[in-house]
Image (cartoon, rainbow, N blue to C red):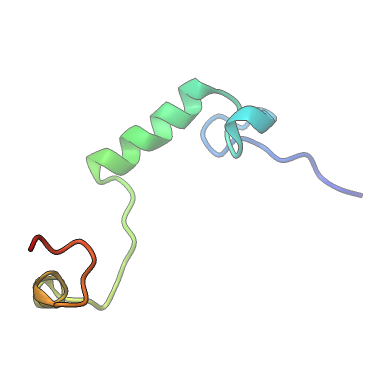
Length: 64
C-alpha cells in the first residue's frame, strides 16, 4: 500500500506541478526559509577552501 505524499510545509497532499509542495505558496515559504538561512547544509569545508576554489585555474566561474 502506497501512502500519499504530503507537503513538508503544511501537510496537505502534494500537487505534481509544485512537487514536493502542494502549492506555489508553500514552495515560496520554503524558498524564503533557505534565503533567510533557516536551513543549513553542514560541511567540513572551511572559508579557506572556498577561497582556494575561487582562485583555482580549473574553476569554470573564475573571471579571467
